[in-house]
Image 1: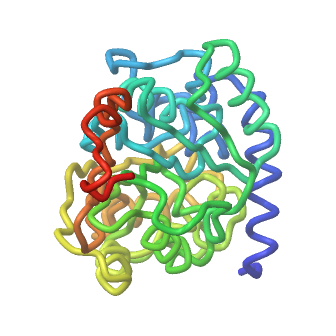
Image 2 (image 1 turned 180 degrees about the vertical axis):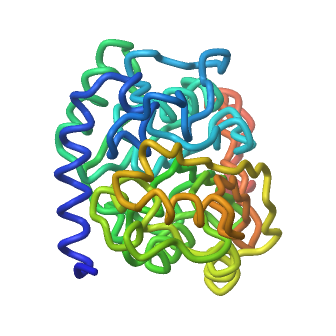
Length: 296
């Protein structure tokens, strides 16, 4: 398997190309990275079309869940989206946080950031911004976000523990995350694990479900919950690109499972309420001030 930097460059290059593909092509493949299937549409993604704040132009069909649906975003929250792509989840989050909140999208693919910024400008959203950077070293200050969301992205990062550590760092005490991602139960065939295209396709980079949840616990998060789980079935016409017919049959009959899970967890601590601004009547205060009152 390639080293971490090589894997990052593979993903960056592939997602630069994916940015120019149509949603239908992306949704009929594994995260837009593999040859589209002729048999199954929407292999991983969930349907956003009935979701408040949904912007069709920003939906590239690359997700594997609907994390914003479970994210418990409140008005005025600061939300960070990891791997923000063309901005789809950011705009849904903005619908929840309102104009008084703030949404920050982070993506390491320049063309994705450019597309997202163009979408935000077209929509007139001045409280949604997009930053270019790695999610395992976020360009974000400590204790910034009330909520962090991400949709089918952590599996693309070689060092997932670093990303989870960054999530912990950038969340405010008492903040939480809701993240949809791909995990495994059982072992993938070597031909799938070692293929760069399947890595960019959100499958080869996935880790065991139990390991994924343990990383979250080890980082210090509490109240860890699985909000949603669904099996991911890779069509035979995609598998046959990597495996023989007999290997495909063996894989399909094995105990190995590929799942999309949406995980929720909280950073310990208590959120500090934002200070309320009060108007002071200076004239009234001045008139009540006497030399002996100590206010002069």
